[in-house]
Image (cartoon, rainbow, N blue to C red):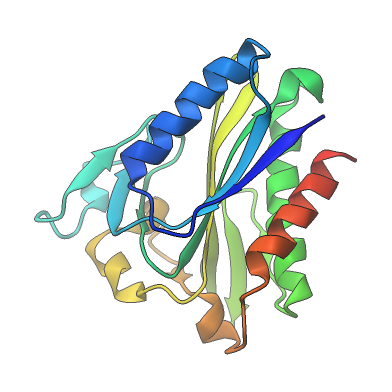
Amino acid sequence: MSIEIKKSEKPIIYEDAKKVMEERLFDVDLNKSNELIWTLEHPDVYTAGTSYDENDILDKSIKILKTNRGGKITYHGPGQLICYFVIDLKKRKRDIRNFISIVEKTIIETLEFFEIKTFSDKENIGIWYKDGEKTKKVAAIGVRISKWIAYHGFSININNNLKKYDAIIPCGIKDKGITNLKQIKDQDYKEIEKKLVEIFISNLNK
């Protein structure tokens, strides 16, 4: 199965990325287009998923963009790697839980390559890092399924500004923190996109 790999060097506005994905989803469904894995960065934006709660907005002056992905409120911005996808589950297992496991495994294995140990949590979607006593989120996942095609994606915090999360209760989780890779381990993450895509494709093809 042919998957197009796309990498954007310049930040892409959230709404523009969403439009590209929705158009691709339509074409993939009609077998007019290849599936897609797309890595990029967004300019500063707060997005709310379909199950968000108004009480999760702590700073009422921020602009919130409502989206059709699953999940609650999150922040995207510079220093964060976004990986979007349009993957046809009709050509694979029609199993949403299995697909989310593939996404989780991909992030965990990518971070393992950089000698960072992380884990998934059945109660709280995302990828987590144990920082002493505190559990902190390092990657957020938001998936939507339409016509058995999985789209939207996930984000990995590399060296983004963590203060931006003070305006919200990220993903509605009050008792856990947020971190990024630079805080966990200050090293070169230049190869992370390449490694991530490689591992993702390998996991999808298993």
